Amino acid sequence: MTNIQVKKVSKYILWTYLVVVCLFTIGAYDKLFMKTESGVSRLVFYLPFVALAGGLLFFYTRLLQKNGEKGRRVIGAGFFETIHKYRFLIEQLVTRDFKIKYKRSVLGVFWSFLNPLLMMIVQYIVFSHLLNIRGGVAHYAIYLLCGIVMWNGFNDCSMQSMRSITGNSALITKVYVPKYIYPVTKVFSASVNVLLSMIPLLLVTLVYGLFSTPRLFLKPSVFLLPFGLLFLLVFCIGMGFLLSSLMVFFHDIEFLWTVLSTAWMYATPIIYSLSMFEGKEGVQWIVTLMKFNPLYHYISFVRTIILEGTSPAFSEYLICAAFSAAMFAIGITVFKKCQDKFILYL
Image 1 (tube, rainbow, N blue to C red):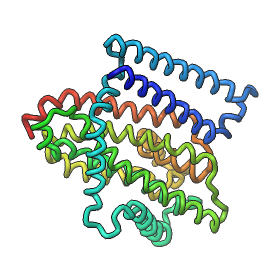
Image 2 (image 1 turned 120 degrees about the vertical axis):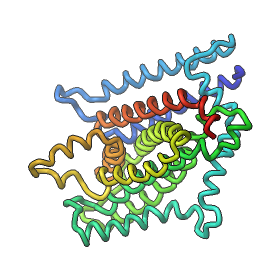
Image 3 (image 1 turned 180 degrees about the vertical axis):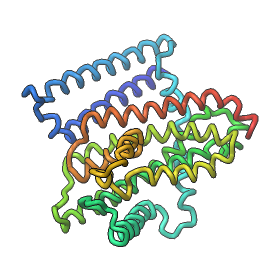
Protein backbone atom coordinates (compact mmCIF):
# COMPACT_ATOMS: atom_id res chain seq x y z
CA MET A 1 0.00 0.00 0.00
CA THR A 2 1.08 3.58 -0.59
CA ASN A 3 1.80 5.93 2.28
CA ILE A 4 -1.53 7.72 1.72
CA GLN A 5 -3.44 4.43 1.82
CA VAL A 6 -1.68 3.38 5.03
CA LYS A 7 -2.66 6.66 6.65
CA LYS A 8 -6.28 6.10 5.65
CA VAL A 9 -6.25 2.58 7.10
CA SER A 10 -4.71 3.90 10.32
CA LYS A 11 -7.40 6.55 10.57
CA TYR A 12 -10.16 3.97 10.04
CA ILE A 13 -8.70 1.71 12.75
CA LEU A 14 -8.57 4.48 15.33
CA TRP A 15 -12.03 5.82 14.48
CA THR A 16 -13.48 2.31 14.65
CA TYR A 17 -11.95 1.85 18.09
CA LEU A 18 -13.42 5.16 19.24
CA VAL A 19 -16.89 4.15 18.01
CA VAL A 20 -16.60 0.77 19.76
CA VAL A 21 -15.66 2.44 23.05
CA CYS A 22 -18.55 4.91 22.77
CA LEU A 23 -21.11 2.20 21.99
CA PHE A 24 -19.92 0.00 24.84
CA THR A 25 -19.81 2.86 27.34
CA ILE A 26 -23.36 3.96 26.50
CA GLY A 27 -24.82 0.46 26.31
CA ALA A 28 -23.14 -0.96 29.42
CA TYR A 29 -23.18 2.13 31.59
CA ASP A 30 -25.31 0.38 34.23
CA LYS A 31 -22.75 -2.40 34.61
CA LEU A 32 -19.78 -0.03 34.45
CA PHE A 33 -21.05 2.13 37.30
CA MET A 34 -21.85 -0.85 39.50
CA LYS A 35 -19.55 -1.40 42.45
CA THR A 36 -17.66 -4.58 43.14
CA GLU A 37 -17.83 -6.44 46.45
CA SER A 38 -14.94 -4.30 47.69
CA GLY A 39 -16.97 -1.13 47.01
CA VAL A 40 -14.87 0.01 44.03
CA SER A 41 -16.63 1.12 40.85
CA ARG A 42 -15.94 -1.04 37.81
CA LEU A 43 -15.17 2.16 35.94
CA VAL A 44 -11.83 2.22 37.75
CA PHE A 45 -10.82 -0.96 35.91
CA TYR A 46 -12.49 -0.04 32.62
CA LEU A 47 -10.80 3.30 31.96
CA PRO A 48 -7.19 2.01 32.24
CA PHE A 49 -8.13 -0.89 29.94
CA VAL A 50 -9.55 1.53 27.36
CA ALA A 51 -6.41 3.69 27.58
CA LEU A 52 -4.11 0.68 27.25
CA ALA A 53 -5.98 -0.78 24.26
CA GLY A 54 -6.09 2.64 22.60
CA GLY A 55 -2.36 3.10 23.17
CA LEU A 56 -1.57 -0.27 21.64
CA LEU A 57 -3.71 0.48 18.60
CA PHE A 58 -2.06 3.86 18.17
CA PHE A 59 1.37 2.21 18.41
CA TYR A 60 0.27 -0.37 15.81
CA THR A 61 -0.91 2.29 13.36
CA ARG A 62 2.36 4.22 13.77
CA LEU A 63 4.29 1.00 13.15
CA LEU A 64 2.11 0.35 10.10
CA GLN A 65 2.93 3.78 8.68
CA LYS A 66 6.68 3.65 9.36
CA ASN A 67 7.10 0.17 7.91
CA GLY A 68 4.86 1.07 4.98
CA GLU A 69 7.22 3.90 4.07
CA LYS A 70 10.18 1.51 4.15
CA GLY A 71 8.37 -1.24 2.26
CA ARG A 72 8.33 -3.64 5.20
CA ARG A 73 5.44 -5.87 6.17
CA VAL A 74 3.61 -5.76 9.50
CA ILE A 75 1.22 -8.37 10.87
CA GLY A 76 -2.22 -7.58 9.45
CA ALA A 77 -0.88 -5.35 6.67
CA GLY A 78 -1.46 -8.07 4.07
CA PHE A 79 -5.13 -8.29 5.04
CA PHE A 80 -5.67 -4.53 4.75
CA GLU A 81 -3.79 -4.47 1.46
CA THR A 82 -5.96 -7.24 0.02
CA ILE A 83 -9.17 -5.53 1.12
CA HIS A 84 -8.03 -2.26 -0.43
CA LYS A 85 -6.84 -3.87 -3.67
CA TYR A 86 -9.98 -5.94 -4.24
CA ARG A 87 -12.50 -3.59 -2.64
CA PHE A 88 -14.34 -3.08 -5.96
CA LEU A 89 -14.63 -6.85 -6.53
CA ILE A 90 -15.86 -7.40 -2.96
CA GLU A 91 -18.48 -4.68 -3.41
CA GLN A 92 -19.65 -6.17 -6.72
CA LEU A 93 -19.87 -9.72 -5.35
CA VAL A 94 -21.83 -8.64 -2.28
CA THR A 95 -24.21 -6.55 -4.40
CA ARG A 96 -24.66 -9.37 -6.91
CA ASP A 97 -25.46 -11.97 -4.27
CA PHE A 98 -27.92 -9.69 -2.52
CA LYS A 99 -29.73 -8.84 -5.78
CA ILE A 100 -29.87 -12.47 -6.93
CA LYS A 101 -31.52 -13.50 -3.67
CA TYR A 102 -34.58 -11.35 -4.42
CA LYS A 103 -34.50 -11.54 -8.22
CA ARG A 104 -38.02 -11.71 -9.72
CA SER A 105 -39.53 -11.46 -6.25
CA VAL A 106 -42.59 -9.22 -5.98
CA LEU A 107 -41.86 -8.08 -2.44
CA GLY A 108 -38.08 -8.10 -2.91
CA VAL A 109 -36.02 -6.96 0.04
CA PHE A 110 -39.21 -6.63 2.11
CA TRP A 111 -38.92 -10.39 2.72
CA SER A 112 -36.01 -9.63 5.04
CA PHE A 113 -38.55 -7.88 7.27
CA LEU A 114 -41.47 -10.23 6.67
CA ASN A 115 -39.79 -13.64 6.95
CA PRO A 116 -38.76 -13.49 10.66
CA LEU A 117 -42.13 -11.96 11.60
CA LEU A 118 -44.12 -14.72 9.88
CA MET A 119 -41.96 -17.41 11.44
CA MET A 120 -42.38 -15.82 14.86
CA ILE A 121 -46.18 -15.71 14.49
CA VAL A 122 -46.39 -19.38 13.42
CA GLN A 123 -44.05 -20.60 16.15
CA TYR A 124 -45.73 -18.43 18.77
CA ILE A 125 -49.14 -19.96 18.00
CA VAL A 126 -47.82 -23.53 17.85
CA PHE A 127 -45.45 -23.60 20.81
CA SER A 128 -47.16 -21.13 23.10
CA HIS A 129 -50.84 -22.00 22.64
CA LEU A 130 -51.01 -25.45 21.06
CA LEU A 131 -48.06 -27.21 22.71
CA ASN A 132 -47.66 -24.85 25.68
CA ILE A 133 -43.88 -25.23 26.03
CA ARG A 134 -42.99 -21.59 26.56
CA GLY A 135 -41.87 -22.53 30.06
CA GLY A 136 -43.05 -19.36 31.78
CA VAL A 137 -40.89 -17.11 29.60
CA ALA A 138 -41.97 -13.47 29.81
CA HIS A 139 -42.48 -11.66 26.48
CA TYR A 140 -42.35 -14.97 24.62
CA ALA A 141 -43.00 -13.37 21.20
CA ILE A 142 -39.88 -11.20 21.46
CA TYR A 143 -37.98 -14.12 22.98
CA LEU A 144 -38.85 -16.15 19.88
CA LEU A 145 -38.05 -13.35 17.45
CA CYS A 146 -34.56 -12.81 18.90
CA GLY A 147 -33.75 -16.48 18.44
CA ILE A 148 -35.22 -16.62 14.94
CA VAL A 149 -33.30 -13.57 13.68
CA MET A 150 -29.96 -14.79 15.03
CA TRP A 151 -30.45 -18.40 13.91
CA ASN A 152 -31.66 -17.42 10.43
CA GLY A 153 -28.63 -15.18 10.09
CA PHE A 154 -26.26 -18.00 11.00
CA ASN A 155 -28.03 -20.54 8.79
CA ASP A 156 -28.16 -18.18 5.80
CA CYS A 157 -24.49 -17.24 6.15
CA SER A 158 -23.35 -20.86 6.44
CA MET A 159 -25.47 -22.10 3.53
CA GLN A 160 -24.36 -19.34 1.18
CA SER A 161 -20.67 -19.46 2.12
CA MET A 162 -20.62 -23.25 1.77
CA ARG A 163 -21.19 -22.91 -2.00
CA SER A 164 -18.87 -19.90 -2.39
CA ILE A 165 -15.94 -21.78 -3.96
CA THR A 166 -17.87 -24.26 -6.12
CA GLY A 167 -20.30 -21.54 -7.20
CA ASN A 168 -17.48 -19.26 -8.38
CA SER A 169 -15.42 -21.96 -10.11
CA ALA A 170 -15.52 -20.07 -13.42
CA LEU A 171 -13.83 -17.05 -11.84
CA ILE A 172 -11.38 -19.08 -9.76
CA THR A 173 -10.09 -21.08 -12.73
CA LYS A 174 -9.62 -18.01 -14.97
CA VAL A 175 -8.73 -15.03 -12.78
CA TYR A 176 -6.41 -14.88 -9.78
CA VAL A 177 -8.12 -13.52 -6.72
CA PRO A 178 -7.34 -14.53 -3.11
CA LYS A 179 -9.78 -17.39 -2.66
CA TYR A 180 -10.78 -16.44 0.87
CA ILE A 181 -12.56 -13.40 -0.56
CA TYR A 182 -15.38 -15.60 -1.89
CA PRO A 183 -16.64 -17.07 1.41
CA VAL A 184 -16.16 -13.71 3.12
CA THR A 185 -18.28 -11.87 0.53
CA LYS A 186 -20.99 -14.53 0.82
CA VAL A 187 -21.14 -14.00 4.57
CA PHE A 188 -21.20 -10.23 4.07
CA SER A 189 -24.10 -10.42 1.61
CA ALA A 190 -26.06 -12.72 3.94
CA SER A 191 -25.29 -10.49 6.92
CA VAL A 192 -27.12 -7.63 5.17
CA ASN A 193 -30.31 -9.63 5.71
CA VAL A 194 -29.44 -10.00 9.39
CA LEU A 195 -29.07 -6.23 9.72
CA LEU A 196 -32.38 -5.68 7.96
CA SER A 197 -34.04 -8.28 10.20
CA MET A 198 -32.98 -6.31 13.27
CA ILE A 199 -35.27 -3.47 12.17
CA PRO A 200 -38.55 -5.40 12.57
CA LEU A 201 -37.19 -6.92 15.79
CA LEU A 202 -36.71 -3.48 17.33
CA LEU A 203 -39.99 -2.12 15.91
CA VAL A 204 -42.00 -5.10 17.15
CA THR A 205 -40.35 -4.74 20.57
CA LEU A 206 -41.41 -1.10 20.73
CA VAL A 207 -45.02 -1.83 19.77
CA TYR A 208 -45.32 -5.06 21.74
CA GLY A 209 -43.78 -3.46 24.81
CA LEU A 210 -46.50 -0.84 25.02
CA PHE A 211 -49.28 -3.43 25.33
CA SER A 212 -47.48 -6.15 27.29
CA THR A 213 -47.54 -6.89 31.01
CA PRO A 214 -45.03 -6.13 32.38
CA ARG A 215 -44.09 -3.34 29.98
CA LEU A 216 -41.05 -3.81 27.78
CA PHE A 217 -38.96 -0.81 26.75
CA LEU A 218 -35.86 -0.44 24.63
CA LYS A 219 -33.04 0.88 26.77
CA PRO A 220 -29.55 2.21 25.99
CA SER A 221 -28.33 -1.39 26.03
CA VAL A 222 -29.47 -1.65 22.37
CA PHE A 223 -26.19 0.07 21.49
CA LEU A 224 -24.55 -3.25 22.38
CA LEU A 225 -26.34 -5.16 19.60
CA PRO A 226 -23.46 -4.53 17.12
CA PHE A 227 -21.19 -6.53 19.43
CA GLY A 228 -23.49 -9.56 19.30
CA LEU A 229 -23.78 -9.28 15.52
CA LEU A 230 -20.00 -8.93 15.19
CA PHE A 231 -19.41 -12.09 17.24
CA LEU A 232 -21.89 -13.95 15.02
CA LEU A 233 -20.30 -12.53 11.84
CA VAL A 234 -16.79 -13.67 12.76
CA PHE A 235 -18.11 -17.10 13.74
CA CYS A 236 -19.95 -17.39 10.41
CA ILE A 237 -16.83 -16.41 8.45
CA GLY A 238 -14.87 -19.15 10.18
CA MET A 239 -17.67 -21.64 9.54
CA GLY A 240 -17.81 -20.47 5.92
CA PHE A 241 -14.09 -21.16 5.46
CA LEU A 242 -14.53 -24.67 6.86
CA LEU A 243 -17.71 -25.60 4.95
CA SER A 244 -16.57 -24.14 1.63
CA SER A 245 -13.33 -26.13 1.85
CA LEU A 246 -15.15 -29.37 2.60
CA MET A 247 -17.68 -28.68 -0.15
CA VAL A 248 -14.97 -28.71 -2.83
CA PHE A 249 -13.87 -32.25 -1.96
CA PHE A 250 -17.13 -33.72 -0.63
CA HIS A 251 -20.27 -32.46 -2.34
CA ASP A 252 -22.35 -34.56 0.02
CA ILE A 253 -21.53 -32.07 2.77
CA GLU A 254 -24.34 -29.87 1.42
CA PHE A 255 -26.95 -32.53 2.22
CA LEU A 256 -25.26 -33.56 5.45
CA TRP A 257 -25.14 -29.96 6.66
CA THR A 258 -28.91 -29.62 6.15
CA VAL A 259 -29.44 -32.45 8.64
CA LEU A 260 -26.77 -31.21 11.06
CA SER A 261 -28.05 -27.64 11.02
CA THR A 262 -31.59 -28.84 11.72
CA ALA A 263 -30.36 -30.86 14.68
CA TRP A 264 -28.32 -27.88 15.85
CA MET A 265 -31.39 -25.64 15.64
CA TYR A 266 -33.45 -27.91 17.93
CA ALA A 267 -30.47 -28.23 20.27
CA THR A 268 -30.44 -24.44 20.66
CA PRO A 269 -32.99 -22.74 22.96
CA ILE A 270 -34.88 -20.85 20.25
CA ILE A 271 -38.42 -22.06 20.88
CA TYR A 272 -37.87 -23.21 24.45
CA SER A 273 -35.99 -22.04 27.53
CA LEU A 274 -33.47 -23.78 29.76
CA SER A 275 -35.75 -22.90 32.68
CA MET A 276 -37.84 -25.90 31.58
CA PHE A 277 -35.11 -28.21 32.90
CA GLU A 278 -34.72 -26.57 36.30
CA GLY A 279 -35.55 -28.86 39.19
CA LYS A 280 -35.83 -31.96 36.97
CA GLU A 281 -33.64 -34.94 37.78
CA GLY A 282 -31.42 -36.50 35.16
CA VAL A 283 -31.50 -33.58 32.70
CA GLN A 284 -28.97 -31.20 34.22
CA TRP A 285 -26.41 -32.48 31.73
CA ILE A 286 -28.42 -30.71 29.03
CA VAL A 287 -27.90 -27.35 30.74
CA THR A 288 -24.18 -28.08 31.11
CA LEU A 289 -23.87 -29.21 27.49
CA MET A 290 -25.65 -26.06 26.29
CA LYS A 291 -22.76 -23.94 27.57
CA PHE A 292 -20.66 -25.41 24.76
CA ASN A 293 -23.17 -24.31 22.11
CA PRO A 294 -21.94 -21.03 20.54
CA LEU A 295 -25.38 -20.15 19.15
CA TYR A 296 -26.88 -20.39 22.63
CA HIS A 297 -24.46 -17.70 23.83
CA TYR A 298 -25.00 -15.44 20.80
CA ILE A 299 -28.79 -15.65 21.10
CA SER A 300 -28.68 -15.18 24.89
CA PHE A 301 -26.46 -12.13 24.33
CA VAL A 302 -29.12 -10.45 22.19
CA ARG A 303 -32.00 -11.55 24.44
CA THR A 304 -30.32 -10.06 27.50
CA ILE A 305 -29.93 -6.73 25.71
CA ILE A 306 -33.52 -6.53 24.46
CA LEU A 307 -35.57 -8.41 27.06
CA GLU A 308 -33.67 -7.44 30.19
CA GLY A 309 -32.56 -4.01 28.96
CA THR A 310 -29.07 -4.43 30.32
CA SER A 311 -25.60 -5.45 29.23
CA PRO A 312 -24.73 -9.14 29.31
CA ALA A 313 -22.23 -10.18 31.95
CA PHE A 314 -18.68 -9.29 31.00
CA SER A 315 -17.85 -13.00 31.00
CA GLU A 316 -20.35 -13.44 28.14
CA TYR A 317 -18.31 -11.05 25.97
CA LEU A 318 -15.26 -13.22 26.56
CA ILE A 319 -17.14 -16.46 25.91
CA CYS A 320 -18.68 -15.19 22.66
CA ALA A 321 -15.35 -13.74 21.52
CA ALA A 322 -13.58 -17.02 22.34
CA PHE A 323 -16.05 -19.10 20.29
CA SER A 324 -15.77 -16.68 17.36
CA ALA A 325 -11.97 -16.58 17.46
CA ALA A 326 -11.71 -20.37 17.78
CA MET A 327 -14.06 -21.00 14.84
CA PHE A 328 -12.29 -18.40 12.72
CA ALA A 329 -8.87 -19.92 13.52
CA ILE A 330 -10.07 -23.45 12.67
CA GLY A 331 -11.76 -22.32 9.48
CA ILE A 332 -8.90 -20.22 8.12
CA THR A 333 -6.35 -22.94 8.95
CA VAL A 334 -8.29 -25.61 7.05
CA PHE A 335 -8.95 -23.23 4.17
CA LYS A 336 -5.30 -22.25 3.76
CA LYS A 337 -4.17 -25.86 3.76
CA CYS A 338 -6.75 -26.87 1.15
CA GLN A 339 -6.96 -23.84 -1.16
CA ASP A 340 -4.07 -24.88 -3.44
CA LYS A 341 -5.91 -28.12 -4.26
CA PHE A 342 -9.21 -26.46 -5.11
CA ILE A 343 -8.28 -26.03 -8.77
CA LEU A 344 -7.92 -29.83 -9.14
CA TYR A 345 -11.51 -30.50 -8.08
CA LEU A 346 -13.40 -27.59 -9.68
